Image 1 (cartoon, rainbow, N blue to C red):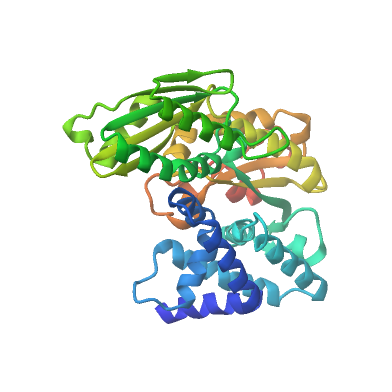
Image 2 (cartoon, one colour; image 1 turned 90 degrees about the horizontal axis):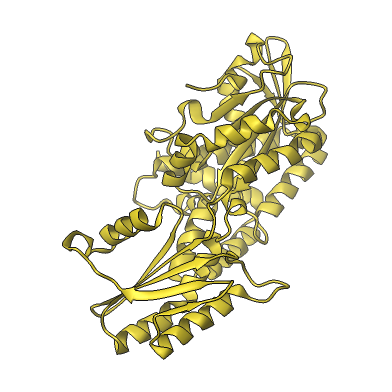
Length: 396
């Protein structure tokens, strides 16, 4: 069976082009050189890295997520083969966008996964965006009723003042300094940071990462305990550990309880020394609000209004814990239903939202029922049509 998965991955790589594929994998390996950033790269480019592992027919059995990637790669080949010349051009343009710069293959694989899911629910699925250049992606038809579906990917980073990517880059940048400092100052330390202005990459306003790096270095060099201004509040204290906290996992769990689930944590060790950095923004993350803003922009741009419209969202750059919290606190539901009251939502019959958990670990108890959250627009004339029910009724 492993050979089947390997063949699917190899065929997809051939579709991309071996030279382009190898070049992209080289870029990803170079981008993930630091300990923390490499973890982010493995998460963000899981599709690409899984395909590359699968095509090499490694001895280990493929994971459930890798098998899903292989199945979707096969679906991509089938979709591409069924397109006209202009459709194949659009397909290859999507591939090129996903394999260059900060792009990834996740938007394309989210689209393919969404199409397969609706086909399994009894819909006839046409890739109207690829085949005919429609603004929406899929035309769904069931029992004589059609609906437009636009698939999109939103990074949870858009709702964070302190993005995970920026935090990981800071942690990798400062890690060698902390190791040297610990060698000269053995012990266990906790640096708590509050960042009222957030933390961004270098831009027109300077390089906040470099500025914060310098400030932490100056605090350590002066052997001070605190430093604060309008951009950052830093406090260095001894790290007091109970027995159960002596290992890193127990420590991180304890710190997360203390600083809250949105805190960013990083641990550096050297010899018997340990240095923990814990940072958070001055306000809570607004991931669900970022989702609503994206929905408000998508509806008028991607749906024609000629048929009922569905917006199928994939929430990226979020882990299992955050995804569960967003659902348990009804944040996603609240913002989605707020959007459905807006004028922009007039053509929308339903909004769906999923994460990687539903794509790659569907049997996980934390995964949403039926593979997605669904929020129906009760004001839409087609909201109660039985033909559309499998795509618009809220999952239990």
